[in-house]
Each structure stands twice: as structure tokens, then as C-alpha cells.
Image: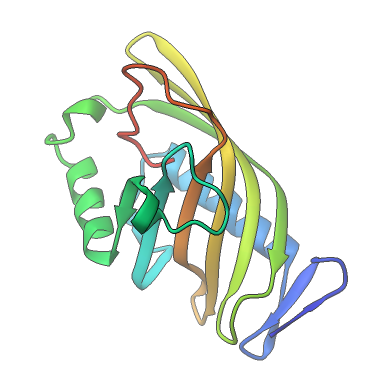
Length: 174
């Protein structure tokens, strides 16, 4: 795989993936999550994928498995998380939070022959129990082109916060 231009596209699996195509994928994911369509969200992953939210002291290049994380889900745990969030057993999200996501500054870069890395900034606004919070950070994803469109191999949300406020909950998908 080679990057072309100024990260406006990458060549992967014999095809060119453009930044607008990746932006559309990320915007569609944001709409799915804000609509609490967790089956739709799960469909955006390839089997075997990972979902990670490292702790706030994370630095690029560190392994969240070794340094700690808020979420470190393998494929089975992603599916279990979706099942729980769809049930009444997710007490922290019953009724669910209202969220609104902003995704920007999408950048593509090389990774491997069959996948590529995507970085983007995010702000997730969350309203719950009379509180309104903003979660700010960046995404560090690995995407795979498939016959059905782009899919996550790794979905990593890195918070830009120095710490989370006392009582803050990451009971929703960041």
C-alpha cells in the first residue's frame, strides 16, 4: 500500500480509498451511534476487530494492553457490549444518554497491504441525568476495505482530557 498526494487517498487492496469516502464512513458511524443503532454499529466491524479507549495518560506508541485502558475489547467483548447496551441490563444507560458527535480533521496514512490507518478529531456531547458533558479527543483507527464497504479492524478513541471528572462514566460508545 502506498499513500498518494497529501493524505487525500491511500491505495489498499488494489483500490484507491479517498478521504471523502473515509469521512462519509465516519459520519455514518456517528449517526448510527447517536441513533443508538448498536446492531448497525457492530456491522461496521470486521470479525476479529478490537475496540479500545486507553486511559487519559496514554501516549502514541504505548500499548493500551500494557499501560491500562478504560475499554480494551476483543471481538467477543465488542459483541457482548452491544448485547448489554441493547438490554435493560445496561443500568448506566437505561434510559440511554443523548449524544451528538462531531468528527473532523480526518487524515489517512499507510498501515499494511490490506488495511490503512485513519486519524481524526472528535467531540462527543453527552446529555444524561441533567448533566451535559463534552468528551474531546482523537481517533486512531485501522480500516479495511471490503466488498460491503469500509470496516473497522481497530477502533481506538483517545481522550484528550488530563483526567475524567469524578463520577464520569464511559457507559456509552465514545
